[in-house]
Length: 471
Image (cartoon, rainbow, N blue to C red; front, side, top):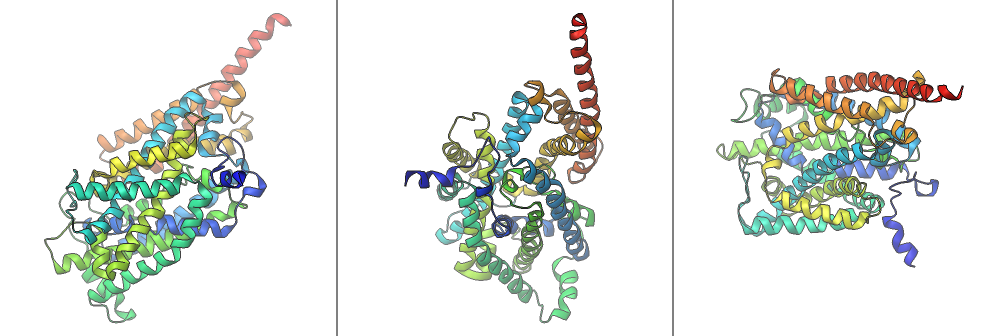
């Protein structure tokens, strides 16, 4: 009996996932639908409208960008995950060394923790509608009262407990919630379009291009979005997960690598249909009250579907926070491998709850997600090159493990230089943050390849010299 109770939290943090623990396609379809058909979609969708995007740029940009994201999961992340069967953090330890990966895991854990806090903020807005306490606006950064603080902490505690029980529990919860949430978001879109004057399918493009996404100037404080902004954001908003390889930790449970296609359930239901539906709800709000620019998922959902909409926001935030907290818990637990991942995840949830009290991240979610991808992306390039390219050139992969080094300086310098170059492009070069991660990936790959060749050559020469007296 006690062994059965322990099984849900056996996560194989420092060993390959065994055959009997691997999961089928259904688990990943439900997981991605549950994670990406989320309360944050009710935050992100309206922000596109606030950025003055046109209908063509928005819809076509989402179609292309989400396709690129699905292909990234399928051809970058899943093939490596199903071969090594290790968490991102333990796999990186073999490549980068214990000390360097501790720095990366800290950064990764912090970013996941803050993002999980944003999910808690989203769900708390639903409670705000029901209990009628003051909630933050688009430009607020500080908590708006004790009711807001209590709601955030309550949702944070609830989310943290589910995440602490491990991936299989998280996946089971997502599979139960996803179908209902999909119907809710579809309802949001239909109701919103009807309120904006859509009477038939043939009238869709006229309403979309002249009433909803009209283009023009963005709202104050927002960046003007074009097709390229939308495409790159849709592709890179989850860059830390796919090209950044964070989802090695999830797909290590997959029986087949092509299960990466399950990400389409999240991209085209969540990051396409749900973003469109949320954007339309915001258009309804602006149409009815032009002075009300607040982006609050709870009120948006309540106006469309009443109490069912509020419940959808709570559960949608929950299903996204669960895997995010799970990843953060793994990152922090890897810093002290003998510590309990269950307890570490609970503590991480507490920290996330405290950050969620301050709405600044949620109200700047587009920028935060782009920054996150820029910081974490380089290690994904390191993993890709280390696994696929170095062995084909006669170089050693997992160099820190085979050499016994605590720091692989090739990986560390590639990461640092790539971030520095990307930051300079943004701060001095006038390049918007949405566009720097793609060139940053190639810069990291070339740097890591060149530095690995040089470092391993120097190591081989040093070994040869040490053996000369014996000859």
